[in-house]
Amino acid sequence: MGSLQNQEPENNFSPTIKPFEPEEFRRQAHLVIDFIVDYYNKIETYPVRSQVEPEYLKKRFPNSAPYDPEPVEDILRDVRKDIVPGLTHWQSPNFFGYFPSNMSTAGFLGEMICTGFNTPGFNWITSPAATELENIVMDWVGKMLQLPEAFLFSGGGGGVLQGTTCEAILSTLVAARDKMLNRIGVDCINKLVVYGSDQTHSALQKAAQIAGIHRSNFRAVGTSKADAFALSARALREAIAADVESGLVPFYLCATVGTTSSAAVDPLAPLCAVAREFGIWVHVDAAYAGSACICPEYRYLIDGVESTDSFSFNPHKWLFTTIDSCCLWVKDPTALVKSLSTNPEYLRNKATESKQVVDYKDWQIVLNRRFRSVKLWFVLRSYGVVNLRNFIRSHVKMAENLQGLIGKDRRFEVVVPRNLSTVVFRFGSFSGEEEDVANDFNAKLLESINGSGRVFMTHSVIGGAYVIRVAIGATLTENRHINMAWKLVAKKRKKKA
Image 1 (cartoon, one colour):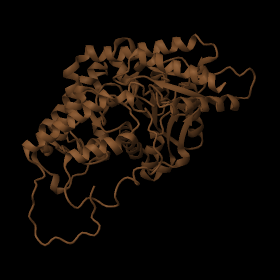
Image 2 (cartoon, rainbow, N blue to C red):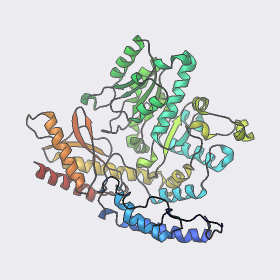
Image 3 (spheres, rainbow, N blue to C red):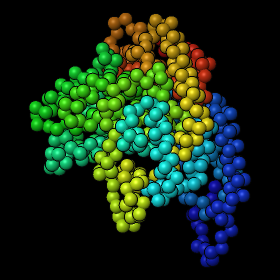
Image 4 (cartoon, helix red, strand yellow):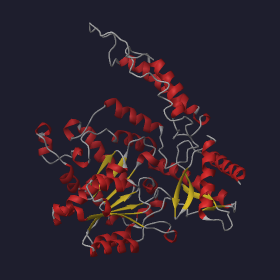
């Protein structure tokens, strides 16, 4: 690998290569495809969690960019030698951490088309197909989820593909903020209060901070094991009532369907009933669990969604569509547009002025956007709803299998009722020992499990208990991987005991 150091300045400009040549692209692309296929053929041979130390890569690479071009073969060699060891292999069938970020052949191919066109379709005129395909795909997926007509373009609402849930929450929170401030006056921004639970993703708190909500006006309402760590309507009402009595203004609630720690499901209908009394915007974050709601047997998880204002989930978690892909629907698109639109002269055009098209730049925080809908379209067409449902069901069956294995060993406990494909457990046989001793044992047990390199799991703390989470959803995972993982847990437990 070359370097810019000690190079003489060039006197003549005589390019010997071009940035893009179709046939050379074809040749190099074949090499990259072969590299990716080989990677997946060997993926189970790699430690699931990277074993490198901080700044390992700095020691391997030069201090400056190469002065002369290098062949793709050399670059791929260095990817294999230097980059792969520094990866935690999210697509490994033995990856059970966080939530899945799964993939598929169709997802990869759609991503290639998206990147190949490389179109920044921020308004309709920049690429009409990009906007109109997104309109269509968002209505398709909305119907798969049986969302109310009011969320679809056909019913006066509409959907947009954001990059992540963080963006979806921030976009809707800003819209809700401005809607409330238009009623009570912009000088009252320091009175606005945001609500979630102590299980809500940290994205909500970050969004509130970015949107200018006073840090002291963020409410993480407590949950309990009695409610399976879901946000109760009673606790929400108590928090809101206290704020109203103090002269504050409640304006935004983020309910979660499938919390990060335990996949808990907040009850939408009762929460919405409370929110409606106070004019609060209700957003539903179903980043993980939303994919499962395309299965009729799991649709009940979002019962009550008809009373909410916005709803989002991530196909890049569990619907076999590569990062980045977050579906967001709103009942009132004008609320987003009023808060997020800008109309400089250089973006003015007849299509926008006709009010007959969607300009997605006004539905998101940033201006530019990727042609994300094409990869979701590839996935939907390649597998059909029937196979997507079956893929999800297979992961839930694997979680049921793991729950059964845990249940056979009385020294372990499933800490909360299993929801979908996430199992939360811990070693709990401590006979009167203090909770911190139990927590310490489970933390060391998890580190031993992950240190083996054979699997990767993550933890959380709920109700004061340190728990081990197994989130099943990697595309390549089979029951044999679940059985192996549990045998490893039992083996490491014996060594720690």
